[in-house]
Image 1 (cartoon, rainbow over the protein chains, first blue to last red):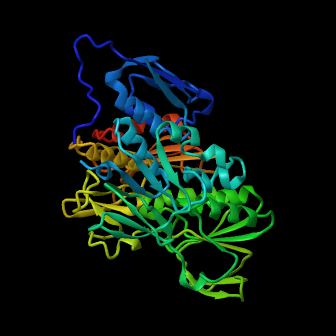
Image 2: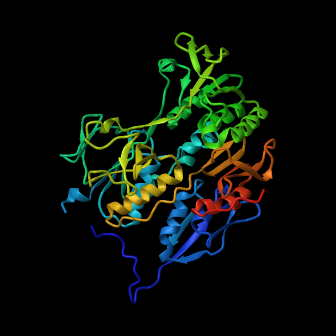
Image 3: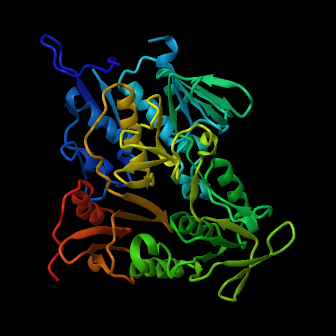
Length: 81
Length: 396
């Protein structure tokens, strides 16, 4: 079957940006997001998540989705444009 | 490909089922996706059932895994109250308990597990298990202040229920067959630390003891234990493990061994049948590994979806064996495998404190990290292990 999203860069295709959003008030410091994407997420001194970067390229979509699904308290969401 | 070929039917309505459906849509899977749930409500997250939900601090909305609007947006159909009863692989049909059949192009088995019950307690009214939201509602209404609660099994679920029931004003006794709670996971030394901590919060323990006899008519009045002691009880909770819901596959011809046997990609011997979550036992070489943890289920779901989409992920699964628990308002976190006779290195606090973080080491390496109420210390020390890296043990 070959209906999987084609993630290769196509010449002339406009790059898609992923905007990551978090709700730190829900964060309980599980650290699953930091485990999956230490370049995007970090914990502050109170043990709550903050973003080291708010946008990433769509080549990171798999890892961003993983952080969304792996957060037990639904802190993370994203939009694509 | 016929229209039916690209219809994915997922038997189940919990985390494994939802995450598989979501992962399929993430990969732009174009066919119909139908979940057959045996529950009466939309999929919810189970870990809070023994914690915030049981306490009454979180409602059904709060623990829902995905909203009805999101399911509609993703074109995922969830059919509630549809327990499955059999599988006919020749006809590519799932049989439902109501006598009807559902055709599939691909079937994902995600029917989960159910708590093991004890035969001698089965018919009695004040006996509880905890797996579903219905179980949690029934147990919550029984945990009234002053009630005497006996919990059989001091694993994570038993300890969580003990903490919640204590907070709700119950008098709780945990009955455990091993020398300490969590001995199989943490070893007896750390198990004892957890026991002492619970005791400081008011929980009582009867370790090295099993249920010998039940006294009472239609309700349990007292439990007699193998150590010769007895307990007067108002409520009994059984938390001694779970068994996979795979009886409906008994005549399917698929291999069953502590669950539906799948490979690392979630495949069975039938290229149209896959498995995810607690119903599954993963075969790696000659070893059979049941699914144990929340994050492992999401990873399995992703792999099954990739396989169904014709893009299998052949890399090895890094099994970090990470789990957490919330008890008495503190977070417990664990990663790794505690070796036999570990050397314990306390990086924060000490065994007698209510907050600590400890490394469980072999002679050379850090093999596990365990923490109580020390989220940041756990994070700092657990990350390399979770990524599959080897960490040298600190010098003694």
